[in-house]
Image (cartoon, rainbow, N blue to C red):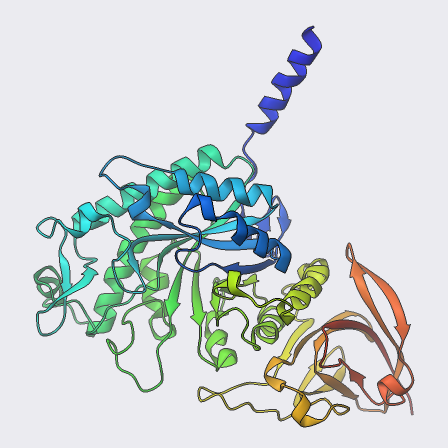
Length: 489
């Protein structure tokens, strides 16, 4: 009679042991002690606010092949009455994620969401004596709380700290791997807040209005990050609503973690691990590059809307070219059935061990034709050097009629795996090769990766490679080929 009791006690003890929290290292994002590539999607703002309606969202995410779902947790639902915390939604999210074998990135919708303060609790919104509103240059009150208000900071920090403490207590399996603080912070419709609290401080600063406002946001977020990490040490980031060309601060959400304000955000908020871009503009390549800098791991938490043809190519580019730790289209629950992102994510998932092994070694490149802000694509072939060879990547498939292909969706990555050896994966990209002497294709094999090991399929040394002239990734599917080159004279 004693043995089953001992077994049960052992099981209960094992389940209560805290998993190793996710962390960032020079190997990227580490989850459960191993490198992890976020193949994610962010849900719509309200899609998981009701526990009774969560399951279909997680079912869809699992069917797509996501390993991570980005989900909001709202301050107004978490603390509907001051000092009384309700973690019903949080607990339901954890339960669904565990049931679907999926990780979560939590988006804390606190004092600000898309600049506005719509997710603050009613007791904050309606107490305008205690919680100060930001004002425009004309003195008009905005539906935006000011970061210069110490009462607001204390209240948001208290709620966020309670949430992080609860998370550490209940998430013993390490389901949550990162936390976003607030959402797309930025001041509108002026470059800075013109409330009395803000103006008094601005009078003694030498900063421009936008830099002044950025310091205030960064100080607020730094206090949030320090307090949250004191409860539970998880990677934390802030996301940026990017500015349109030619627009002035206030015409875009002013003072967020934008490239021209990196010095402020990194200097004032050192507890924040990443500054991350939300990219909805066509010029993804140019928008993402500034965020891939030293001591700022690249993560794209929002990228276009789910179903946009560019998503898969952008994911391959960001991961292959810029060592991104993850990629996440928005409104993922609305991804159309049969969307190419499903097969693209499956391919990236199979390549993940190889990608992790090459991270930071400059042996990997990402390829896609750049698109400008106006949506015009430049399909000019691109040259690059790798492994002692000069490669040229073309983004118009030579064997498909131009009116039957969409180069916006073409993308690939190439990884050098040994001397003269490469793995090429993607769709709609054709590679040719050059060196100081003539180059031949010793072998090209189509295949797949299973548990990090290449499983060969068709050999492609004939017509499929134009008799050794090029490596071609057909535009109608996502695939992988193993390439070995040689030189002759």
